[in-house]
Amino acid sequence: MNFLQPIGSVILHFLETVGRLIRFSVSAFSHTVRPPFYPRIIIRQMVDIGFYSLPVVGLTGVFAGMVLALQSYTGFARFSAEGAIANVVVLSITRELGPVLAGLMVAGRIGASLAAEIGTMRVTEQIDALTTLSTNPMKFLVAPRIIAGLITFPFLVLVADVIGVFGGYIVAVYKLGFNPSNYLQNTWDFLQAEDVNSGLVKAAVFGVIVTLMGCYHGYNSRGGAQGVGMATTNAVVSASIMILCFDYILTEMFFAGI
Amino acid sequence: MTNVNPKISLRGVKKAFGPKVVLDGIDLDVGVGESVVIIGGSGTGKSVMLKCILGLLHADQGSITVDGTEVVGANAQVQEQVNSKFGMLFQGAALFDSLPVWENVSFGLLAQKRVDRDEAKELAVAKLAQVGMGADVAELSPAELSGGMQKRVALARAIASDPEIIFFDEPTTGLDPIMADVINDLIVKITREVGATALSITHDMTSARKIANRIAMLYEGKIIWAGPTEDIDQSGNEYVDQFIYGKADGPIKMAVRA
Image 1 (cartoon, chains in turn purple, blue):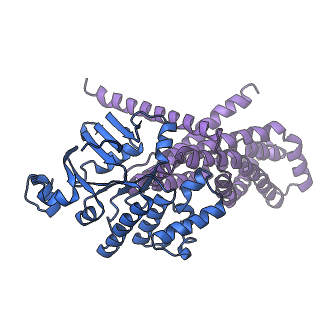
Image 2 (cartoon, each protein chain N blue to C red):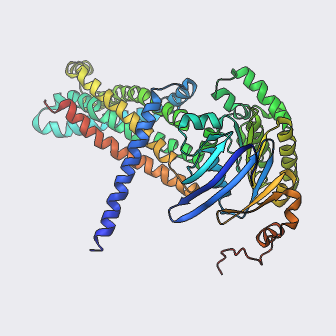
Image 3 (tube, helix red, strand yellow):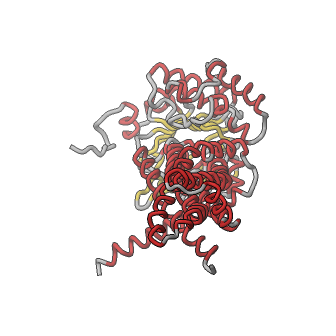
């Protein structure tokens, strides 16, 4: 029965990691609602996460919208349903592609940078130094980043939504020859508040996931430069997988009855 | 090593990482205003012992008291209260890269909201002067300083809150002999000026002889010799003799692969 041993070992290791992550998350969330708060750090993180991610999110949004319009046209032309392109673009962007693509792109940018920054602080004893200076590292390092992620991701996704729809508009009008006012009218008519709101709720959840994963892997990194490198990779991979996983769960919650 | 009213007292402290026993029943007292240096080879548990006192690691067994307050098993509030008496100089300085030098120095005071930012800056400049650094370095980033200067800034940070107890973790490691002597002189001067109790760990005998009132040697998780600094050359302990004269031959066998 020796072959069972490695399987059991993998399962135990997985459960241990899940338990550690849950404990870390509970501690992190409890510090986000308990004073003292660090508004200067929260604002600085909001600028880092939000403002400096705008170019990445904008480019992702515009090209996603453009490709979507082009592909929809190719498919719908077979059924003479080209008029539905505006609806497809706006629904796909606001409900799915905006939050998911923005989330994945920012996971790569911010998840990696948070894990590297906090991981380096761990291996250079800066986190220990915080504790000796009567400052709780969870409160000082982790909580402000989670709050900043929670607040800024919905704004980023709102920008991705607007730019994505604009990308679809450019292709539809300038390449496929759609009437501009008809296209915009169709977009506006079929858009419902629920479509945008569900995307923004997803964005807030993804914001928490990306910052939490970055902080968790950085905080628990060990063993010098190699450990920090591994933490960075793990932060991006785990955040990306969790974004896709939670995207399905949230979609099921919002639209299961429709 | 017993003391009538010790500032720090360790009794039967044990710590293991998995099967590896690092501390195997440490007994040590550090009196008020005393400067005790723990010597020992790399990997003998010096840093682990220090981290157990600071609450960064939890001892498996035994008792650690600071001014009579038990640290082993203490809750976060008690530990934070005890830590407010400490100043700590980390081996690699552990300065916060994201903050300028003056904010590093006055970090603890700002975190505890004991001063506002203007006062904190004034105080930081005064503490920098105490370690022989001009006001011009206050605005620099830690990355712009040499290793010796970083150590001095870290020393200024360690004394910024006028602590009752200062810990020095390998204060001269990685420094040239002249800078090492400058740091040793500063440690002696500052601990006298502040009137603090000092506990240092090092394997640099020149440093140990200069800053210590008493020296204790740690080997295989136990204190194998302790006594006044002037007695160390006549310790009568072959382990101590081998260590302080840096001989390859003797009872201490280093694990060296051919």
